[in-house]
Length: 215
Image (tube, rainbow, N blue to C red; front, side, top):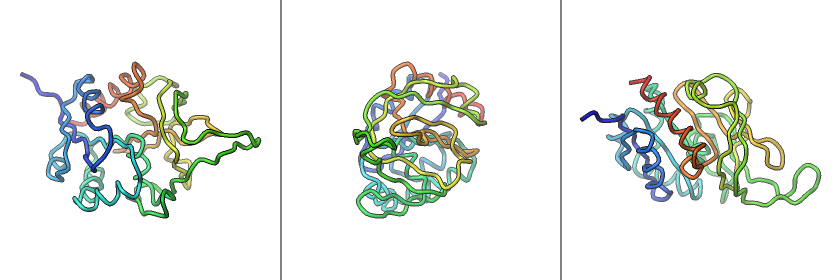
């Protein structure tokens, strides 16, 4: 029996790991929920999903040396997919519960949404619900995605890159913010594809195609 690509779903002590794993299975992948760096070393892809606090996640990653394993995986050129907190952790630091250093893969910081938009209207924080993401730029994932789609978001903080070079998707909520960022071996999004129904399935199918092309 053919076995799909092995995807290490990083277990950092919290998060909706099983729903992410089930969604990956529906896209033909073989997820393994793990806190073992050795699994990341042999995986075809790594997914870092996320709910919870930035500082707690970084502490758990460091305790298991998963921070080093994630960075080594990305350096190997294999496909990393970050979901929600898995996007935020790639940046240099976050303001959540005091300043905390991140993985530092992208220059920039993670900041809380303001409670008013530019016109002074109240803005509900956290941002919860369905919003349209407009994709642009060049990346293997984008070859398999529509120019825009509607996804489910749950977050109080958003990434603020130092330069726009890494941004390949934006969403409007009290103004534009980075909903997707990328590098050659990285694609990370602020939304939750595992909660996004058909749009989420299209998104994870695109990840499966990227992983297959890299095997």
